[in-house]
Length: 172
Image 1 (cartoon, rainbow, N blue to C red):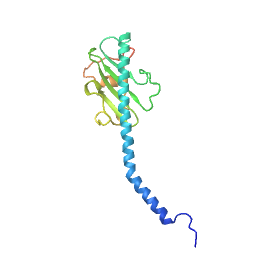
Image 2: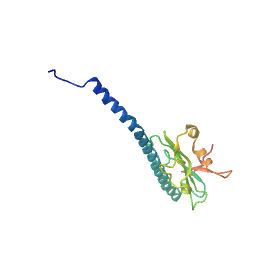
Image 3: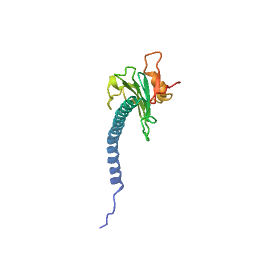
Image 4: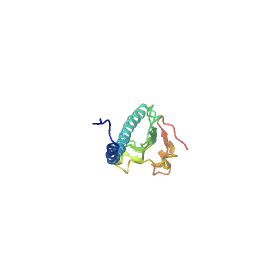
């Protein structure tokens, strides 16, 4: 009697076919889960940035760096002390034209998603499944975005003064 060692070609092909079928079924679910996790992470980051901006704005206004009504732009890298932002870029505009009721307007993006001109005071903090608030990144919409453009974009007034967190006027 001959000794059998290993698998036949048919057995190996059957295993490969079974593995391929499992991959075809599993890959879309895994990719969807990864995208959902990225969206959730982006939503959590928005919440963190707004919370830190609120804290910094209160500190700046109580400390005298900024005074009175106006629109103040907080850059997440320069003004919030984030030394490592990863892919995240953006601004939070504090519309304090009514100093008793400031509005926080988010302009934030990374390599996958963006939230532009989202007023978290009126529209609430965006959730991961909110496709109106958290959209897929469109590089053409964030290409020219800077502090001045972010500040002016949310304004209905013809003349709006924009300031950085030190109280200095931002000009074009």
